[in-house]
Length: 333
Length: 271
Image (cartoon, rainbow over all chains, first blue to last red):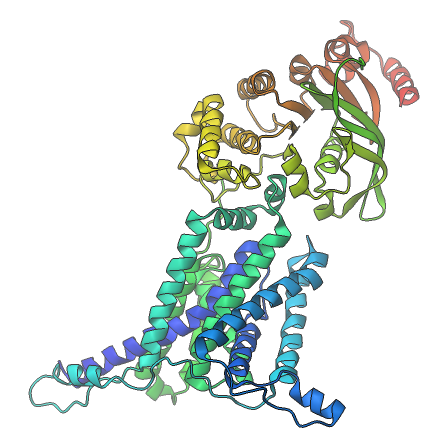
């Protein structure tokens, strides 16, 4: 193979990996949208908040330490050397479940049967609130997150690919970040578990029932409030996974909450109601933007990755508004 | 109503207001005897559905609330219970327009009916077979998406789903809606069957007065949020006013507009 082909393959592979990262964020949106019809603007901030909390536990930070120091004139920052990754992750999961419970208790409960736009506004408020809360609890500095997932290029892959090149060319091998490979594996696992859960468990069935018709779900005795707590907990868990991946990749900082914006075109492509759609939409956007940058980018001065996804989404909105895999609106004739 | 029968469900003079302003029910009272099939009749907007929804307490999701009166089930007040609690106690509603879970298969729809039950799988399996024995058609369609089944099959699914909760009372709202006359008969036959064999009590809201009175034991006629008439089903079916206004049978010769007006007056007095 010529280096050109090999380079293209490398771009595609890296696109796939990036796509998986987008999918992870999009997945959280789909879960909540399906079960409650709410477009949860706070999903990106949830990922940030989860990552902040995780780092906080790992490093043994005292929550609200700035506030405490300000009020009491103390100088407390840490309560100890911190927890190991597994324990910190488990605790963060508990925090996200508590968060889901509070959202239902303080917010959703009062907004039953309101217009979608009102619910959407409420989640925007929630997003800003959480951003502030995360800041106040754990501080605004950029943090590094390391839960022990290997990162950096794979030398083995570099060596393997170096042998693929045809005689007479010079080629240095493909670069693939191990962290991305892990992220892809974890995403696949996550989706498999979610799919099995929603297809084959009683609670999963109830979730799908609520997604279809929440009034009818009430009439068979499904409690919407507990379903919402469950859904938001799962979305919180997905946010944590996304937070870990993005946080390990680019550090835990407030721009992390903006990855939610990248999830939007993914959702438009894949459909707001489809879990596989979120995955495949993410992959298409990931590969699409990398390839576009690789081929067309140099001709237009580069930086196409910033807008490619949104333009693609625009075309989808015009020609296939329900997305590739969005739930078909069942219409009997 | 005769005193010797056991009353399971009592609605005492309830008033329902939507959105804090719209008064929909203006004092509805009714009683449902154990093992009975009670029909709630009346035109569009009379308050049949609202009555049923206030019993099953899903008014809250539509910004409605019961502001006066009380509802009792087996001697206990239930107007403040959650829908989940009501289903657990054995009051299950089948909504107007069927409301199947479209993207779930027929069998999954039926299984969601058993959501609140804690029994083991075997018992729920047995009940599933019981439902299939009443609705053999559902067994054939078990694995197809409910949204793609016919209107009749969806109505059967909705009733079957309610049965899976092992209810004492089913609140059946407009089972005939959008179904061919033949199917309506079929559904009502099954209702009667379930009433006799499974001992399920029914409160059904119906516009199709003819069919409803044929299968019901007792009937209430609602108009503008009030009960304007009630009685044994057969005597209601014989009643001249009911015949004319709800069954569409007039006394043979054509009536003049004056008579109609006179009748209106009579009815207003009744209300």
